[in-house]
Length: 164
Image (tube, rainbow, N blue to C red; front, side, top):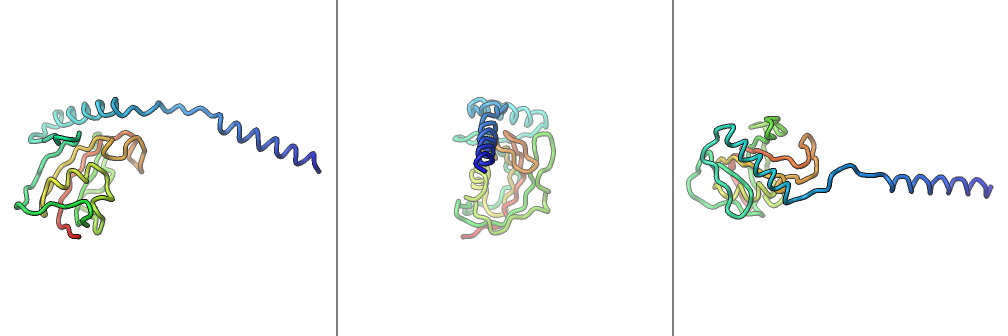
């Protein structure tokens, strides 16, 4: 009986050691290099698609274009809830969130990606904006659903309403 325990423990130890000893072939994440890559991809995308009027945020790498300027008014705060419609795409044109059919109700801005937290505060109620979100302000180097790791994201968002 003791012999069986010895073999079982030996097998468990070998399995655990082998599992820990696997090599990860994923290259290490370099945020500085990724930021430079994202900036290049965004500027190339904007140029290739003849998109004019794009502004780069002064303090971040977010690029945006205000598509519909709402009357001047209060802007959304991080702890506000909102009602929006939006479309999300990758730079290759693949839609990962389905256009005007996608509506968010009752989410707080602070619960969403950093690109939205910065971009949506640039418009007021009734405004519409296009965001070019670098990967560091989106899902970073983590794949999420149909979004690959290190993806630049393009959103068109209409901010219908917000409230506390």
